[in-house]
Image (cartoon, rainbow, N blue to C red):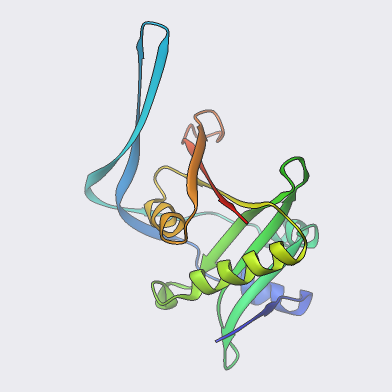
Length: 175
């Protein structure tokens, strides 16, 4: 597998990748108040049936955001695109956000995402960044598990982040 920076010539192939996923689990948030203390917990809940999530994407908006990214890496083998990772700057934290990480369905759970993250970490260290961040939805359990597997630590949530009222969870990896 070859991991390399993507070029504009690659963008059409990257935009064509299937970024949908299926999950049988979600992170459920529970919040309660005890006196002056607010207690928030996340726990893994098994769903009664698998949930398939398809994201709608507009190639023109993807191309626009990729043009402003710090780094757009792609994984390929013998001309077949297996996935990509997009990094965006977060200057206030001297870090970068993994804004998109997409692996084609037939290559998932084969180390492609881990290899892209490893390459992104190396790039971030070379650019003297302090940390990498990931933001995902509580229903994207495959992404949550990947973050945990790759050593990212849960660092917060925003229950008003998405217009559809999904809860965003944030992970960080200090470099």
